[in-house]
Image (tube, rainbow, N blue to C red):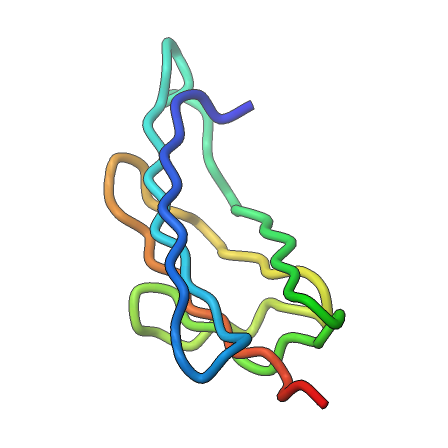
Length: 89
């Protein structure tokens, strides 16, 4: 467990894209342990696959059809993740 977390979700256009604003705040001795990755499992209606991901405006290459891996996430700062999904049918 990471400790205190906050999460704000927002919708965006075109429909099916999504964005997150996360903040990870350590608790107790958690600052002394490395935080090597943040793993997200975003899903939209219809089961569409992930097409592209950015984190704080930079392209993220660590994603599959179902999961996003953010390497070395920052603690105590906003982390903005934007995800483009494959178009719906």
